[in-house]
Amino acid sequence: MPDGTVEGDGPVDGDGPVDGGDPLRPAAPPLRSPLRLATWNVNSIRSRLPRVVDWLARADVDVLAMQETKCSDSQFPTLPFFELGYEVAHAGFNQWNGVAIASRVGLDDVQIGFDGQPTWSGKADVAATAEARALAATCGGVRLWSLYVPNGRSLGDPHYTYKLDWLAALRDSAAGWLRDDPAAAIALAGDWNIAPQDDDVWSMEFFTGATHVSAPERRAFNAIVETQFTDVVRPFAPGPGVYTYWDYTQLRFPKRQGMRIDFILGSPALADRVTDAQIVREERKGKGASDHAPVLIDLRID
Picture (cartoon, rainbow, N blue to C red):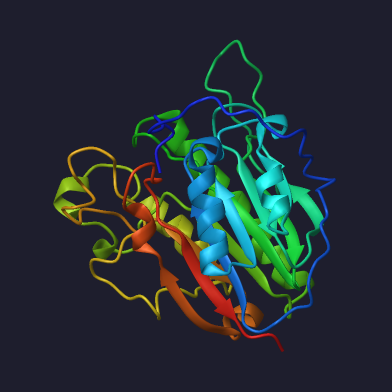
């Protein structure tokens, strides 16, 4: 969620450059049903690496979209993923933001950013650039986008306007993808930094006047849904009290005071193939956990 601090972040050497356009390529196994796809805001891949690779193996995940990797391409620890049979594509510039996709079912047509993606600087003397917040690849026949939507910070902050502009541009691109190919299996997966419903937060009173629950943010989220993208997880994990993010402070996790801000939105062709979905709350527990839980879906292979 926040563009903020990292719990337990520390220097870990990378394993060489990872270029979004030239991922490492271990041999992909034949597709088997169901195809398991997940998204996880890892809040620093270098801090979370042991937990992430362990969970990939235990959960038998085929494709993982990651957000807030918080490293440059050269710092991304590719080797442990490669040893498990995953190709990796990563887009990141520094200790902020960063998105990645790890796949053991192919990683093709990698794309960093989407058409019309707004730029951001935040500093008058620094040129605005497109941040590392969107990465796509085709994995096992699914066009997967790993998305880290801007936080917004506060309702009066320029970052909030940037967030709304970013979502509007994503909406236009997403509508275009379905216009071009209505039968495409597309997943928009990641940390959306929006709670679209009141029961997606532990207390609406607490969040009154804050970002993530404001009417313009919710309208922006719903505008993407209205292009025929569906929240494919909620039918299997309905609320209230079902969250994906818990702040590290104020004992939010043991108090069950969380937010549901991580989503997988599927095109009609993808939504029709979802056979199961879950939010893996257990991965928020214990030492060295991210402040987000993984979200995963199972897809029937047609």
